[in-house]
Length: 96
Image (cartoon, rainbow, N blue to C red; front, top):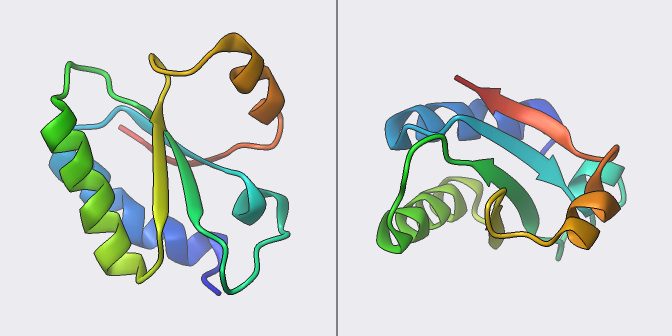
């Protein structure tokens, strides 16, 4: 399973290519409870408007590089309850 530093190293150039503002890791990888079947959960702050197609392209690029399923949510697309649930466990992977 990839370590946090390995995930960062893969995410950062892709995030730069897509013009993202911040990316956080949350879920089992952030908590240290991931197993070989775990997906990678990413919370994205877009910074500027991004089409669904472009967001899907980002997810696909990360999946290809990580060879693992990736779930992507945006800061504008999550409910407060969900935001509260992950707050404090998220790990900053990228910031422009």
